Image (cartoon, rainbow, N blue to C red; front, side):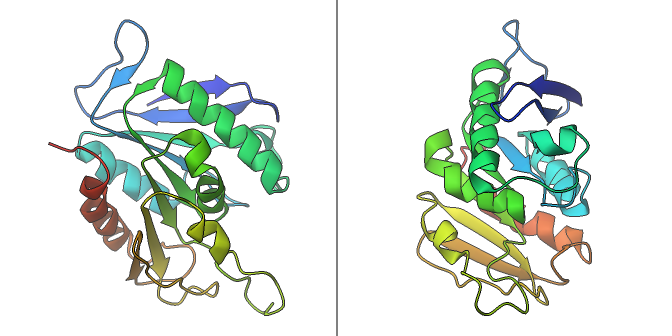
Length: 212
């Protein structure tokens, strides 16, 4: 694993790059693989979340590269992040930098919870071929008056996989023509059965990336 500090309009972000065994960057610093995942963390968590690590292991096992991205507020040591537009601005800058300087591959963007929301909102702007949503927070629990986040999923504009815990208090979005939804054991943390999380992602990735 290697780490890159990336300048964004919101301050420096950090990408932790995980490459498949036996794969190294070329002379230009870019890694050439059949595809890559760029994944963000949840609002109050980091890139060491169990579901993110399980997906990273599964994807690199398929010959893909994975970049786990820390938003600028996390790099700065803050627990609470800014509102969506600031997250989106930083995320778009990070993906553009990775595409230009680190990853020569089709990109699936995504992340867990708030990271999944950011990836959905920016999928078209970043040129993603698909979005991976781990524990998408559809409706804040106990707040029926709060706006649903379902429109963010609907507007992704690319194929989406949602892996959701069966007892997630944020609810589970319905499947749709371009949206696959896989319920797995557990709650919003997706810690109960990371094997099921990895299996769902492993099954879906060949539908959006040119795997051998």
